Amino acid sequence: MPGVRGPSDYSREPPRHPSLQINAKEPFNAEPPRSALVSSYVTPVDFFYKRNHGPIPVVDEIHSYSVYISGLIENPKHLFMKDIRALPKYNVTATLQCAGNRRTAMSKTRTVKGVGWDVSAIGNAVWGGAKLADVLELVGIPKLTGATKSGGKHVEFVSVDKCKEENGGPYKASIPLIQATNPEADVLLAYEMNGETLNRDHGYPLRVIVPGVIGARSVKWLDSINLITEECQGFFMQKDYKMFPPSVNWDNINWSTRRPQMDFPVQCVICSLEDVNAIKPGKVKITGYAASGGGRGIERVDVSVDGGKTWIEASRYQRTGIPYISEHTSSEKWAWVLFEATADVQQSTEIVAKAVDSAANVQPEKVEDIWNLRGILNTSWHRVQVRVGHSNL
Image (cartoon, helix red, strand yellow):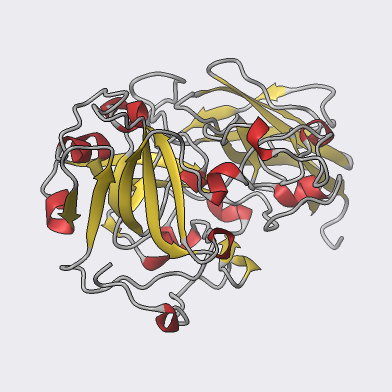
C-alpha cells in the first residue's frame, strides 16, 4: 500500500501515559489503572487500552493512502480518505472490550494461554467516521443486503498490521454482510476518536468499529475490504477467540467445532477498589462499569458487601444529567454503563458485583464454570477483598 513504511520504522513507538500497566512490550499491550475507567464516561485516549497482535505500523503520505474494496462485487474500487470523508459523518459512542479482559483472574483457576489482562482491557469512546453501509453503497451494495449478486455474504477487513500468527501476513477479521449494510448496526470506518484524529495506537488513519462485538473484529489500520462467501479464514477468526468448555485442552481441541466469538456477554467490574484493600470502617463507595454485547442495555447491577449473601441495587448512569434507562432511545446502546453504590462496611469482607442485561442474561457466579484454555470472556462475578482496620494498615 502507498504510504506504509517498512518494519525498520516500527521501532518508533508512539508516546504513552506513564500510568499504563504494560502486559507485553512486543507486540505492545497495555491497560490503564482500573480507577481511571470510572473517572469519566468517555475514556480519554491516553487511558484507552492498547491491544496489538504485531508491530504498530506507520502510515504516512495520507494523500496516497487508500482502502481497496474488492471480492465478490461487480465494481472493485480504491477509496481514498477524501472519498470516505465526503460521506455523512457519524459519531457513535461505543465500548470496545478485548475478549481477554480479566484473563489474569481466570488463569488463577488453571493456566490459560494469552496476554495477561486485569480488568481494564475495555474503554468507551466517541468514534467519528463514515458508516460502512454508506461506504458499501459506493461499490453498488444497497443497504440491508444479505448477499451480493455474485454470492458475497461476509465482509472481510484486512489490516496493514502484520503478525506472526498469520506467518507474517496481515491481521484480518470479518462480519456478516447483513450487519455491515445495516445502518442501525452503526459499523463505522472511523478516522476520529473522542473528536480528534485517530492516533497510531488506535488505528491511524482509518479503522473499523464494530459496536457490541469483541474488540478483535474492530480491525485497525485498514488496508482493504473483501466481499467473501464464507467467514474470514484468518487465524484470529478460526484458531482463536472461540469459547470452549472447561473440558477442552490443547490435546483434544478441535477449532472447527466452534464459531468465532462475536457479541460480548454481560460483564461488570468494580473499579473503585483494588483486588485487596485496607479501608477504615464505615461507608464505602463502590463504583465500576457494566456492559453487554449486541446493543443490549444494563437492566440492573447488584452489589454485595458480604460475599454474595445479600445484595443492594446500584444506581446506573451514562452521561451526566440524563437518567439511564435500559433500551431507551435516550441511552447509548453500544456504550457501557457506570454504576455506584454506597454500603456500610464494619469488618473485613468480600465485595461482589454482578450485572443483568436487558435480555435478562446474568453473569456466572464462579470463574471455574467458564474456564477455557484461551482465557476469554471471563464474565464471572467480580470480587474484591477488603480488610477493615486503622488507616495505618
